[in-house]
Image (tube, rainbow, N blue to C red; front, side, top):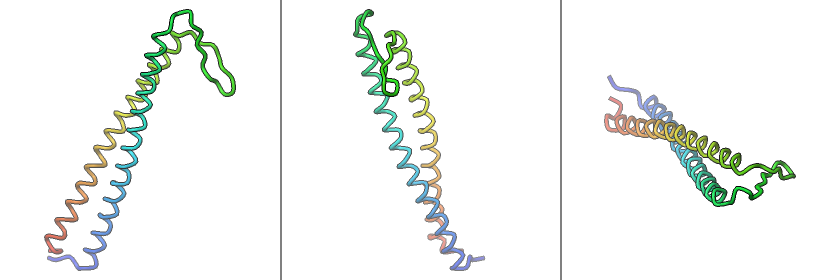
Length: 120
């Protein structure tokens, strides 16, 4: 039993649209991962700099339009916490990326199979 040409074209268009959407989402996720990795590098650099300071050095954190004194131990804890959160976010984004890549690959394979079979 063969599939009518119009139905085949409509199905191919739907799958193509799904593949394009997945590809667009893949690019967005890759950009987000790169940004979060850049943020992690900045936090790690800041943490290294803070650890090199002497214990009596006054450290201030920006809050709105003012700066508030914070002990260096609190700053280090905050930096570690933010780094851990970003790493968790990257892990979740990588899972999403894998899922999107699988969707894209499957969509492409379905289109190729449909074209090869010629609607049969």
